[in-house]
Image 1 (spheres, rainbow, N blue to C red):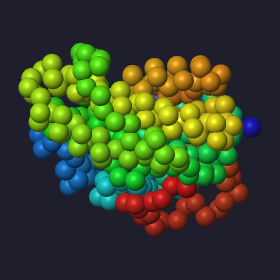
Image 2: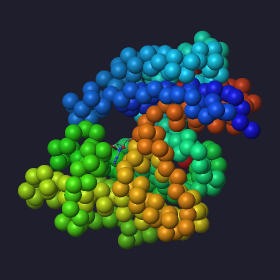
Image 3: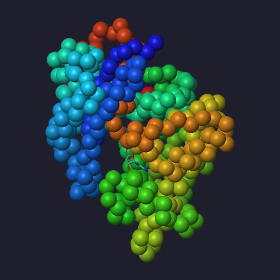
Image 4: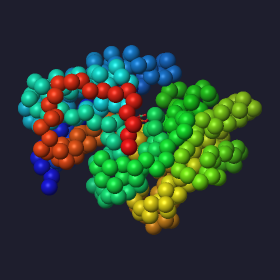
Length: 340
Ligand code: KG4
Ligand code: ZN
């Protein structure tokens, strides 16, 4: 049973300040998002201390703008959920301190949530949602995992990266070719102009059994290929194309293997890299061929945002209704936090 509970979600784990309100009956009422990308671009990557300070500047005005946009008052909020980790510790502390104090002032419960779990539920913001159990592929800047999702909160890790995350590999490969931060979207855009077949990158760890990944070798392969090339626009685009193609095919091979192994018919893909158009198209083709169903977040909910946090908060509050232990004042954050 959906209830009318309204949850304010707060995301500050990295370089995006996100706030949103999710209503159990009406769905997402609104969200505000501020990206610090421009500020960090000057340094070629996220500067943690600058990120924390900017979250402090943006959190209050964004929340006020959200209330104005949704025509709600603070008193209309029934609970707060915030990202407690994993992420940059200072950045997490800003969101946690804000969430806890606001909840204390309003005398409402406050729930710390896991950032990856929030990514995982992002496709549920859509109209068509998967049924448990399903296979999930999480591809973000810090994580690459295949999970068997049996129920909300019941996750079995089937495979993960042994070194770089997919997003990280995109970012590092983009950087070595001199593309601007954040590299993932820049590399994907460049790949559109690439010519297929000029370069062939390996598909790491696909020739042996298992569901783990390794992406650091692809980045080195890209570096060597780039150094041996003319390093002009065309060479960069052809390398971007070959790199993206190799990453996507590697992910596809492992997804297919995991689907066969689990006999699941539904695949959920989430996290920043799920915004990648080539990956989305390839995954759709795979699922059509396998007679299964693919669930992807809308592009705006692939990368970090407050909406997925508000939704996860709502789902958790619904599941733990009788838990009275939710209003404690401790500021709970974890820079590292294993998921399953
Ligand atoms: O989920 P996310 O916003 O933050 C983390 O939790 O890490 O993911 C960010 C990552 C970055 O590495 C970024 O380069 C990558 O997702 N990314 C993309 C695309 N959009 C974002 N990678 C490839 N293609 C894209 N279109
Ligand atoms: Zn994220």
